[in-house]
Length: 76
Image (cartoon, rainbow, N blue to C red; front, top):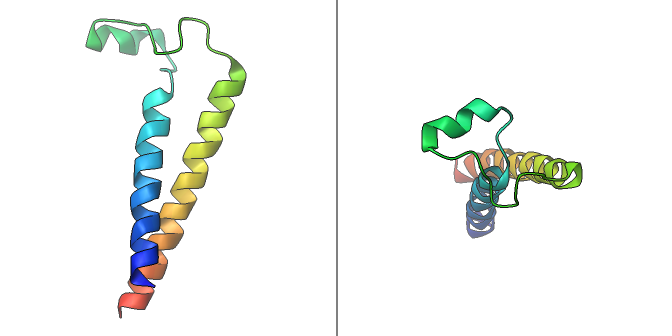
C-alpha cells in the first residue's frame, strides 16, 4: 500500500510541475526576467487551455495532499 501512495505522490508531483510549466504568465512584465515574453503555444492562447491547465493543477494538488496524508497515516 505504501508503494501505491508513493507512486501517486510521484505522479502528482510530475503532473503539477508539467501543468504549471505550460501555463502562460498572468502579466506581461514577467517575461522581462527571462528575456522573452513568448510562450510555447504562441501569443494568443485560448481560454480553454488555461482552464484545463488550472483544473489539472488543482486535481494533481488534491491527489498529492490526500496521498501524502494517507502515506503518513499508514507509516505509523
